[in-house]
Length: 498
Ligand code: SF4
Ligand code: SF4
Image (cartoon, rainbow, N blue to C red):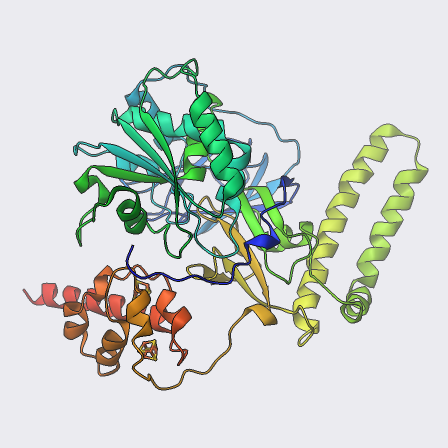
């Protein structure tokens, strides 16, 4: 890979933590736009009762997906963006049928039916990569996980190596792919060890009747090694030409979590209703990797992961704000302990759990407002990593493509005012697609987007490496993104005049 950067990693905050489950939230919101392609179309109406694992919206085109409820409960609302469900906590579950020894067509149909998308963050429906007439020689399972803070794939490979490999083999079976390469950055020592052991031990008694060659390949730890085109180049030496797809050179790339989800969908009939995410950043207490249901809100996740990382001054502020709510919890708890009637005890317990969650939400809101300036003050929430993640607020809900939620404190967020370019060319040196961000930036400033296009701005993968190294702190990656939009608009305007 050309260019790339080495950064001071924050992965240590979560990489040793076991995967725990976070659930029991009252409201779940399912984003109809949670993938690239057209929005899914609801097949339920307000007031309907649904079960966990029930389809609630159907994908409409070749790059759109089905959406399933991750809880049992009632449809509270449907608007242009979300289906909102109130959890009844009964967890009544209907799965898809389990497949035994499926053929390639059946596997593909299952992936499509189960609503599986690229879980590394791209949101590209997995089935559409396999609906190709190209001859595919190699399947790459992307375990690079080069983004800072993220440790989800690392943990999944360490804990579920055999399952990931079974998922990979199912994927290979769809197009009779002969080679499977799992690329893992060298710093993920446990993951490499377990994946190698599983690959060695792998037996064909696993309801799978093909035998692709599996290679576990440690690769250099360097950002953005995990970008699709980069990992292809690193692992195979092949380059994907501009405006082409990996399939055009006989390669498909899928993420580790995607392979794991394929395994679950085929052998357990589990649609895409849960995923593992990294919760990290210095403004949240219990950093770690959590199995979270789709549609859970960031506020709920934050509170359940221990809430804010606070000092004693903040604690006083919380107590003040949450006094009333805490009293209500205390009252319920006393009532629960006092009653001898088991049914009543259970009912109060459910109420109490909800009250605690609501209280946490309230504390969260007051925390954000009240403790400005404190040491670990929450200043930014990101969905995804620090380089390519998007800024969100506490209303954001977990989607299949959400690999992480980062609660960043002041000390973790750069807040520099950009100065003039000093022409050091560092940005060009680290650019993995070998373009000249500073030159493009200069042309963009004078709105010469034709020239930006000639300088190949469209091949920018928006990795953020250039912004990271720029001593003038120019937000180059953001600027490249904007320039790409302008170039696209330019093309649209031209087409309209033809
Ligand atoms: S120009 Fe684009 S691809 Fe190159 S380093 Fe910057 S963001 Fe990454
Ligand atoms: S890294 Fe920043 S200062 Fe250096 S050439 Fe690029 S834009 Fe200019």
